[in-house]
Structures are given as structure tokens and as C-alpha cells.
Picture 1 (cartoon, rainbow, N blue to C red):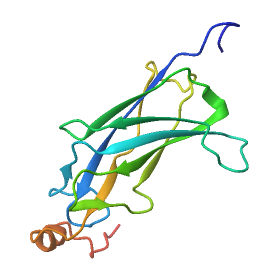
Picture 2: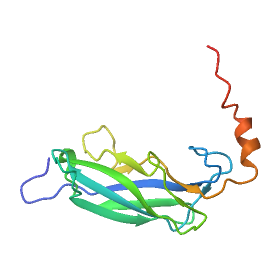
Picture 3: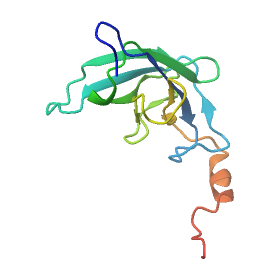
Length: 149
């Protein structure tokens, strides 16, 4: 809890943006990271019936597909936040898919973590056409075979 007249510490939200080159729905061996993808951290009040974004901050991925966004003057438990994909610089990998286009992030100080850095799940754009190697690659994962327990 902040002392009157002071502000809560800032949070840093980090994550990665990739290109799903096989349109598999997950990161595979053929997945590539996207440099220059834009993302936005969006925060809403947890009691908001309208879901209106009250605060946001944007970031861009580096050469490794990694972003780091600073959220200044954290408001903690009053907010529900998520990182969302905005755009990809790759015209062959710019399609979004619900479920992989945003990742929730918990920004509370008393979560048992010693750092103010929080990691969001990876976000992915879909390649327009899967790479030619994808059929064999996905077969190698034996996705159609149910494990026996």
C-alpha cells in the first residue's frame, strides 16, 4: 500500500511475439519470432461493467521478438490488465486468432514475487500460408495419437 502523497511502484510487463508459420495453434520448431510487432498493455477497473480501457501503454518487439512495457504508477488490485497484439510488420504473418491475440497479466505487488517484472504468455500471429515443411513437422508431434495412461 502506498503512503499518502507517494505513488505505487512501476511494473514492467515482458513477453514475446511469434509467427505461427504452420498455423498449428502453438509454437513449433518452425516458429519464428517477429521483430517490430506492436503490442498494447490495456488495463480496466475490475468493477467496470463496460470494460472500458482506463490506461494503456504500448511496446514494440526487438530483433528477438521480445517486448518490455513499463506501466507507470501501478494501481494494483483495482485493475485487470492484458497485453494485446496490435500489428505485425510482416505482410505474410499478420492474421490474429482469438485466444492467442491477448494475454492476461496480474499486476499486484503482494503476489509473492520479488520483482516488479511480470511475464505475459507468448502472443502469435498466423502466417498466411503454412510453410511446406509443416505437414511432416506436425506429424512428428504425433498429435493424432492419444496417450495411454
